[in-house]
Image (tube, rainbow, N blue to C red; front, side, top):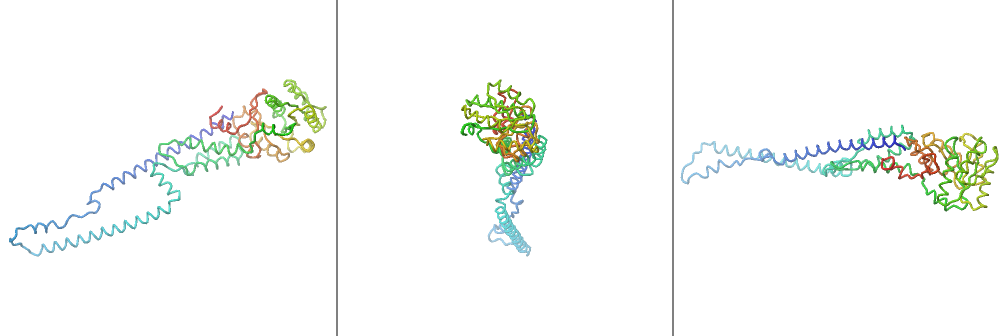
Amino acid sequence: MFDSLKEKIGEFRDDVEETAEEKAAAAEAETEAETEVEAETAGETPAEAGGTVDPGSDSDGDADAPEGEPTVDDGGGAAAVDADADANADIEGDVDADRNTNDASEGAASAGDEDDADTGLGRKVRSLARGKFVIEAEDLEDPLWELEMALLESDVEMSVAEEVLDGIREELVGETRGFRESTGALVEAALREALLDVIGVGQFDFETRVRETDRPVVIVFTGVNGVGKTTTIAKLARYFEERGLSVVLANGDTYRAGANEQIQEHADRLDTRLISHEQGGDPTAVVYDAVEYADANDVDVVLGDTAGRLHTDQGLMDQLAKIHRVVDPDMTVFVDEAVAGQDAVRRAREFDDAAETDGVVLTKADADSQGGAAISIAHVTGKPILFLGTGQEYDDLERFDPERMVDRLLGEAD
């Protein structure tokens, strides 16, 4: 399930990890080079650092001459002493000037550090000093572009793909990591958060809502032809009965040839009561009769099938509106195929606009390698995915769990 998208998300994680490792290596090399320069500077000799040699050594020699012995002064000695004194004064003046210049530079640098304290540059410098580096927007540019292309190729709706990318940027940009630390866990946490934000929209506890609703609970199913709507109703009948809730089926698909026979076969296999009328009857009357039967016989849940339709079929949409007006169902569930990708997303939005739905069931999820519909529908419609159909058997119905879905996409669950 969703294997192709899972692989592409894994490739994004590897790309970011590789980019981070390259940046870490470069930052570590830069830090080591700066450390070596500082060490060399600290080890300079006094002469190399601008120190002076004691100019008084010659005069000391004169001072040590034996007392009483005459000294010869041809005038050159005094001139030499004066010249040395002038040179020393010049050197000391240069040193003082250098010291003043250095003090001014240090003051400017200090002021600059204060200005940069709260900027990306300041954070980057401080991080390097601590043996860490900062993940910046440009580090993610190429991997995020690849991920965007992968999401779109997997039939993820454009606005949903952009939401996922924005979420990843928000989680990763500005984060720091050590030169020798792995970025994998950081990237995975960002992916998890971004995916949950779009997949988990509108979630509610389906079973709790059913149990807390006055009896009988009426659930009507709608969608286009051929997506597994009737089979989904039969699966949900099994689901409820396994949880101790009694069920009656209602065949509101009164126009399709063979519809009565199809749902009757399911009812017989499940040993569940079916309410149906002659072909061509009023769908609203069928669902209404099922509600009356459930009320009279203490049945917990009514599951009402309706004719497959397009949202543009005004006659069938009017029938759905009439069911809502007369029966007032507790929930309306839209059913479509996971493998339909963006077509399923578009139809879910159109049906929700035409006749407000409460949730979605995606069939054939076991055959869907892309996962685009599963990721996109809740975010686009604001209505949650309730169940995934995962096969042809009655037990092949999986309660949709956003956390488990994300685990699957990150390769942490089957």
